[in-house]
Length: 325
Ligand SMILES: *[C@@H]1O[C@H](CO)[C@@H](O)[C@H](O)[C@H]1NC(C)=O
Ligand SMILES: *[C@@H]1O[C@H](CO)[C@@H](O)[C@H](O)[C@H]1NC(C)=O
Image (tube, rainbow, N blue to C red; front, top):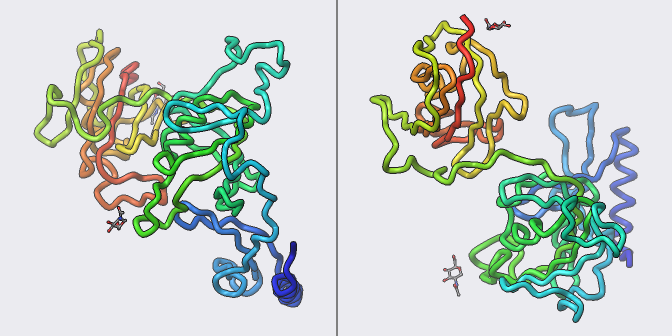
């Protein structure tokens, strides 16, 4: 039901927008874990870099929310209850087994690993039917192990094309202590549709600190030899090399990878990470090593995370393919 006052304020905003010859768009504003829906007044001609939010805190647009499904209050009898306490029900079969006669366990049904990324669409409700979050049909790419426990478990059950409803107990969501978090607490219900899986290289187990058996150079760079090489020479700063590498931040984010478009042929001097520059000069052709690069040899302790530069430890698996000149 559209309440009168909300409707009136929406009309007013639209009128203001038209008068300003600006355009209106719905935006989802990341607000901690929740995503607030706000009507964005983009007054391009006045202040190109500074969009203003309608009425300060934004309009309450909850009357536009999709209606909660009837079974959000508790899992129905035909929902599957997993040992963790997560309950789930398939709403749409995956593309690999669209027909009921094809088993969901068939080899075409690929499911993500915890470290893979998935493209999803989702909407969440509290058990009393209040919508708490939604991707609003804008697909989101998330790493399976970077979200709440209930999602991490649930997403790994899904194959592309599949849609599921999950009833998530508080301990697999954001807990039940309201004062400890700004996130919605208590049991939550989510509908998730999985579109595709983006495979990621498997991250090393030791992402937060080098293991005890790692060797360390005088600069603080730690490494472990994984596969010996065949070459005798080591690259210098002016050497042109070809190397394959995957680099992770300590939170598990893949930050730089030749499997995802990072440059594989370059001069050692041009490498923007000091620790990686040193690392390459330790290696011979054909060799593979794992490096733990401390923050001071990485992007620094105060790196700009918004630019995708994680502060702190970086872990790089590097294979020196060839020394070109
Ligand atoms: C809830 O969280 C607050 C703040 O972190 C804490 O002080 C309080 O002890 C917690 N309550 C319970 C019941 O755990
Ligand atoms: C490095 O060598 C490759 C091939 O040997 C060449 O294509 C590339 O331009 C060189 N890069 C630099 C920065 O010299």
